[in-house]
Length: 288
Image (cartoon, rainbow, N blue to C red; front, side, top):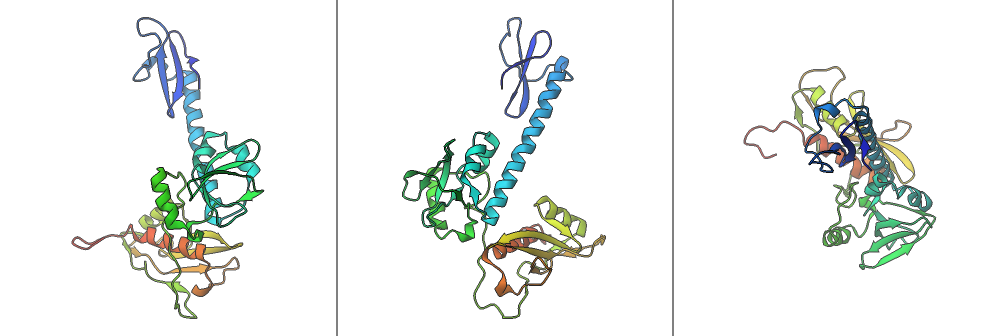
């Protein structure tokens, strides 16, 4: 973004998300100032740039949230859409280096570029840069990636840093031998908190919803929507509370047996339960 006139003797611009100024006169002409002069703090151009910076932050957050939804749900995303949004820096940051899969499910690759012609440039596990142009691609949830460990190792070699957590996202695999009628997991139950308000606050800060006495997460898995829930205490209760058991329900509110829970719903539900439990009170001398 270029420099804008801000009254006599100064210009302002947006750099690194902050408003910066430079002098246009005297010996310091053209030199960027370390801080905004008092005369500029309430200038209309400075206020406009600050509001624009706030909008850019909200836009970047929204882009990352949308890409996270595509990834967690493993939804097919039109290649043409990716090509259209790629020039936007916020979208590009959110999308770059995510593992995508096109027509060949056995050839995942790290997304590096999207052209106006609708081609995607990806780096495969063989280290080759290839161009693909399927009608849609998916950004699989990591629990669905058979080559996850190889992708993690290759990402380390490439120095890949994903803005939207995918390959290094914590995952849980549903164990074998679950009881036929079991509907709850209590692995992360019993985490003590000084108040329900504190536990609910932790849940919302992590992006989970509060519904009645539970923290919940809606997950799309294999074409159906499942809600994972963890008991956090009666609403309006202000005393000590503990994390309860984890369970899953379908769109009609029917409790699912553990054997019915799909791999993504299982992993994301366990991820929520663990994240809540990790904030518990730990007694001195006890391992966290």
